[in-house]
Length: 577
Image (cartoon, rainbow, N blue to C red; front, top):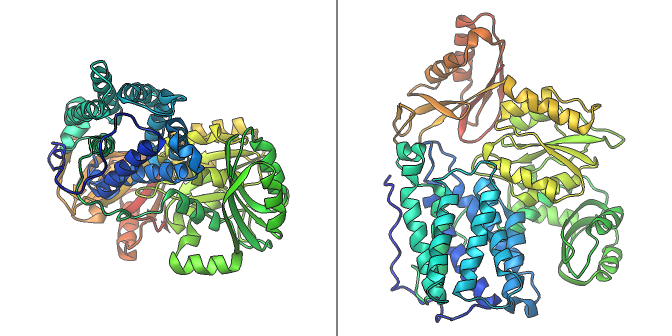
């Protein structure tokens, strides 16, 4: 795969709009819509820019779904407010945060937050205003990451902003400023392999940076009234922001006795979110209420929808009202989206080993993909499992909804994936509950953390003990290469089995068991006691038995456990303790 970014697209296709000297809210929203469609149409190309040759590239998907969440939120604006660039930018910023998926989505949401701060209260913006907004976007994006690294999407945003600011000093033309930003972004993207050795080895440019280029490309073409090739919207997989919310809350239905699933928006001023959350939640069950002092998004199960709507209308204007008989809704959604009911495990429930008749002070919410992995986490003490992992990172809103759904006021989050960490870290800022994030980067780390979990300890003490346990386990993963590559001195051919130790590529070969043994030999097995193997979907019992027998023959002191994990993409996930 070439490291050269895609050439700028030709402009002989359909026109977008006549150029405008200034943008009001509607033009800003139109520009963002074109940018989102262009990113969405190219999401697979961005996904393919994965450093490791493993089948889990999802940066394009995460960024596209984050943008869709932003547009969905902007669509909730009252018609009179859509002319106001400030209102549109603020709603895009909020929607992108709530819809953010993966680290790239969270960073992108901070770009839009800074962009909105830069626009301030302007009802219309020109090129100078846009450059200022991009500058603020750059600044906030860098603060979103604890240790900013050059050669990533941060670099692309920074250079784009610098070029935009320089162009704005020469004049306020919107198209000229965006053209300069796009040129800067393309130049920065091409240089990312020179700044990050891992990109150079993988022969790719930064995936998040490529996403930023596509967004600016769409906006720039809109600004000059040029055209992009025909865009097939909605061709990617995965739900929009609103649909993701519905998929999540549908999983909260469980066995509720309440008859009507009630969803609506409230638009007002000075809404007391905490009080509204308490009072609406008291009217029913499975309440999910998110928003701020100007807007609430409400989901609740009630016997009498009229009562909750009577309460809500006193807060402001209502919109997007949707009331369903839950049994009918469940049948309809299940028919349209098979398996959707497995997204989140509703808790507490009669089948949960951790069911408590009284709410606990704190509980654990974890992320996992695969029924076996979810069950392992539950058996170790996790209360709620959010389905997610590689290629299916849960959004901010989905994680927040799961946190809201538990009865406890204290919540410990286990993201169990490095690409979900930034999203998880947004949750404490968005809820009145006391949330601690234990930075688990894998399922084995999540299980090790749960082994150290004590529900009788204070929230902070429990989280501290769990964090300390993360280093007690080594994570081994076996998957299949999706392309040829040479990483860290390991040469890989497409289709080969590859082995990783704590996210580091260490071995490749043709046979799953042979590569597994090679990888495990690099984990210091002579000093280990327990090896737990979770098999992925499609792995044969014969291969599992071969691996376990070989380990016992070579390391008689080891305790070997095997479980069906059911995880996608990875043939084996192994915890070495």
